[in-house]
Image (cartoon, rainbow, N blue to C red; front, side, top):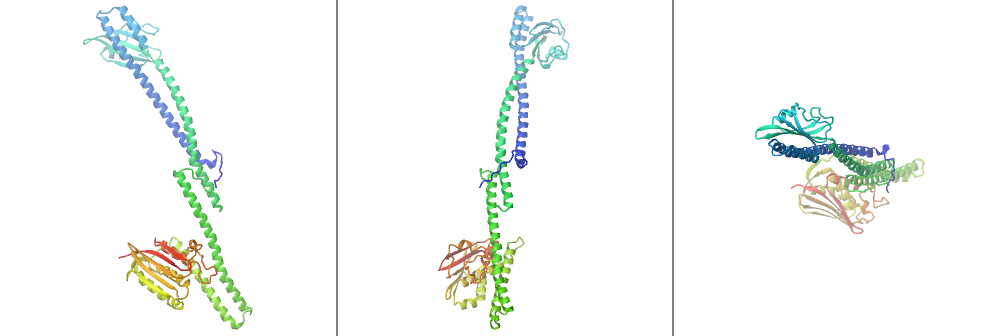
Length: 479
């Protein structure tokens, strides 16, 4: 059953969803801001480098023209024509400066004429000393807007005849950058929109199962174990949902066992108490004749012993299931322990004229276990075998060694266990004898199984109704 939990997406119940969404969105915004800054810096540097290289290449050509003009190879008319051609190509204003810093020729888009003006700035001195410079700015405050300036000396051999300065306005680069920025931001906006949708979907995929499990847990706290978490993926959240459902199923079974246990205990204690009360009341009010009182007092004593046995076994089972229960491990001969348990049951065996067979693969069979607990296991199994085997039946106890394990089996030729009863024999208070004529409390096999599990060993049963039953358990073998 799927729990319907449609809460407001941004309500308190969705705190995990909100946290995931907020974390993802913050991470995405940081990433987008960093990407935009990196892209902006990259594009600006790229455009500036491209423009700078373009000016340097143009400057080399102009430098050669200037040298040819100074040597008289070309006239001023050709020089001016070449300057106009170059400045249109690179979109730059070109100045020729002599070795004293005076502008003696110019071309380009600048409104003011700088012809005849002496340039005295540090950048001019560097170029006239033989350096090539690149600078972004207003060139000693001679321009109203920032320029990209490239300056290189005009050389004739080792002699510096002057310099060439090329000034290109940055607004051209800024316009190109603005166009690129618009494209970048549009792309980032589309990416952010898609990412937000994906983040919402992912956050919901993660938070919804957790919210659903939270609601189911609240229902479970009220005793409703019918609801199950939806397993919609195979990731960690899906595995958690699967584990949660298994836990819910285990808790439901545990709750059923608890109710059944309380019901069984109430019934088991109520029956003998009712008998005792009835017989004692009959004796006190004279309903039971004096000559019959001894007979009924004997029944009262038997019922008292039964009550004592039930309480003792309940306390024993409770102690074994507590975290404080510890095994007293030791090495002992399990064959000798079996002989001793059979000897204690000798009187009952003789009364039923049972054929007891001992089948030991070895004379001595050393095991590592809690001796007292294993004796309790053997007493329970052999007691059941005697109890449910008819007169002149057969009882077989055997041990065999395989590897590091000893296999202990208790077999009988009794009434067997039906297929209907087989799955329930380890449950508390369960007994195939519904009449309780055998005197069984239904706790013996529960105690047996718990003891074997405490030893981290295995126990199992095979039975054929009408032919007999075999219980087998394992212990660690010691050489």
